[in-house]
Image (tube, rainbow, N blue to C red; front, side, top):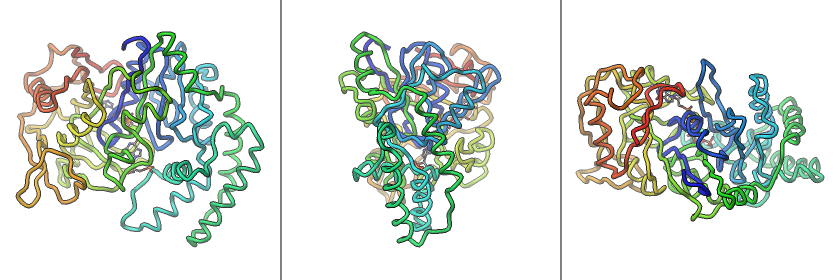
Length: 423
Ligand code: GDP
Ligand code: IMO
Ligand code: MG
């Protein structure tokens, strides 16, 4: 973590890789932790000293009172959900007010954006994306069509701007014949959230960040979602609506590409996906169920079953390429402790054609597996790589060889303490 640099910590598959845990572990090494994309569609779980938190919009560096946390301009924010999240942290004894700054450029998720999210999903029927229902797509769409409202708008004649945008949304909903909703209570909470947010510094975070970098301070950019959910490079249209990749750090925070230092790519020892869309390594058998059970693979935001499968090196190599990943972090190795055989997808195959490159559409491509003997050892109490069973070491070495990227950190349990450096 060089001084004056922004290191990025990015989910490089379909999200839920364990970004929250590692950002929390890395926070002591940084001056600032910043979210650059996404919003309350994220659910970042942090566990320490017997306490568990699931953060949605607030960066995972928030537990260290000496660090500044920033919600960057590339994010979208729902004031009511932000208030609930922040109040929960305050009730647990964390005073956020001076250590959390919010970009004036972040876009606001209105209650009607969430209704639109549901309406668009309903209209898609079987082709639905399986969104988190947090209004992400409609909010980013309006950002792109230049009709959205931003945090900075709160400070000037806000109610009129809100009512105008809401009226537009109600018209769209009427056109879609989607009228069976009532946002009265939600809207009340939302405006309480607008009031509440004003107790936080609403700042020009890009200037703040660039000044900090010029003074030699360092920043950790906390990714949300994952590369395969990126709007440009993921499995479109079954993606989220922001740039979740390394390029999104620059656009979302307003920092130059030359400021980027290390790029940490975080993945699980196996694969999961929540929501719809192609997923070549998905297991529909008891092995998939076993991974889900042991790994507690249920959505942190929606509680939905996560779809499970073996590690996919086609996706991993692609994400490493797109993001310029310099170090890999492997999570949840412990979930595979009990398996006799562990499989890894090394290529895709369709109609006799084999590829190791990510196809335009992964629909219809079948995984080609290589099998490994499981380590069948409890990893969760291990504290040093010297304790690793040789089969686990071989698994890591194979990933490093196949991706040409070092695995420098391994996580063997959800707790902050269950993290082992290999560097
Ligand atoms: P994020 O969205 O990338 O921050 O990840 P989530 O919090 O949505 O999902 C990761 C889940 O795995 C959480 O429930 C974590 O507590 C848990 N977790 C993280 N690392 C490990 C690990 O190494 N082993 C196990 N068993 N669980 C982990
Ligand atoms: P974190 O940061 C996993 C998925 C949804 C859906 C698609 C679009 O916790 O890793 P959206 O609500 O963004 O319009 O949904 O993206 N999705 C995630 N999956 N982890 C996430 O975040 C996700 N955020 C969105 O399930 O398939
Ligand atoms: Mg998550």
